[in-house]
Amino acid sequence: MNIDRTKAYIIKHGNLFEQARLKHTVGRKYSQKDVLQSFSEMQNPDGGFPYGDRRGFPSCLSNTTMALSNLIDMGLADSEPALKSFRFMDRMKKSNGSWEENDKIAPLDPPFWDIPGDEESTIWLTAASAEILRKAGKPVPRKTLDFLRKKQGPDGKFEGYIHTTWIAMAIFGNQSPVTSASLKYLETADIGDWDATCISWCLSSMKLGGVSADSGLRKKLLDRLSELQEPDGSWPSEGGIPAKVQDANAVLFAVMDIIKNENINA
Image (cartoon, rainbow, N blue to C red; front, side, top):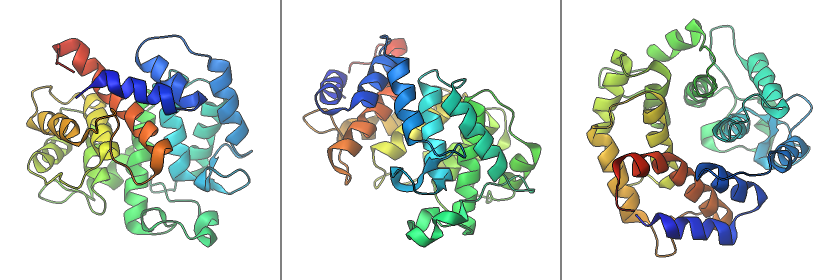
């Protein structure tokens, strides 16, 4: 994996936020004021972030968790945009501890994995919301943990999308049988169709959950990233250059500490 080429790709193609994100990942100072302004300009009055990142569109739980993830990763969990988003999430939480997508986005024909009221969408959005709380050092409601436990099958996989199975490692921690079962399932899972977004997210969830560095899954994911990397340092994406830059930054965030701590040749 050629990390220097990845950095160069982001520098060449990244917007203001992606440039700042890169600087933070590699330990350089960036303008927090500019980053926070860009988030505030996009954020809806209710604290959520709009569907499709289009100003004026209804707030979308999926987009809000992604925005919060970026803010937390950049050390901005206590910023005003982040605090407003946490309040939005709190209002969106159901009485049973789950999170369901905002029904106001239904008329916008959302993708199949983000449909309000859909059980599989609700499961992974609940896991994603819980992971955000963990990343920010906030407690995950007991009802949320109970809701998710009931969705894990005997083989370790959670109902619905594979995302939930790797997110569970971040939520329940390395001493939980939920995590052990998830890890066991993923270590033998076929990751041939996983893109850089999935791989980097899984690596980050493992790190947050304290999964052992000796895990066979981690080696499998790192090897796959090396196989998929393109000559210019990016990774394949159907979303064009903006998505490729986002993916490149996500990969760097997931692997930089591994490279530093283990002297991996990158």
